[in-house]
Amino acid sequence: MRLLRSTDLALRVLMRLAVATDATPTTRQVAVDMDVPYTHAAKVVAELQHLGLVDARRGRGGGLTLTEKGRTASVGALVRVFEGDGDVVECEGATPCPLNSGCRLRGALRRAQEAFFASLDPVTVAEIVAEPTGPLLLGISRGPGAV
Image 1 (cartoon, rainbow, N blue to C red):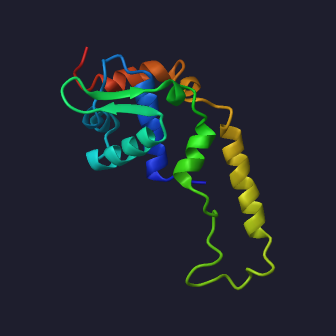
Image 2: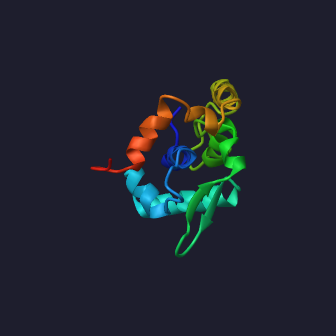
């Protein structure tokens, strides 16, 4: 299974904010730290804010902070939200699969997808930034040439 870019970015943004030592990094700074376009980061941050995982304040003294809900959020639940309810393969659509009426592959793939999500359910954002990941993230967030 391959995650959507937005899912990957959402997880990385939450991880970055979980180890933030600077007061409140901005969306632009997080985009630079993660080496992604600002527009993509802004869209993901807006969704994370809508989910109550991130607080975003505009203006002077503004920035992003991880909420307690964000720190304890289940990685599996977050992946489900960003990935959506779609099937791993498309059996319907413009050119329906001719095996659709008697195929067992779709069910097997759906069970595998759910097992993937279920294996991530007990994992929290706080757990995925524990040693050694946290210090690595701090190095990234300082940017090139920082001490």
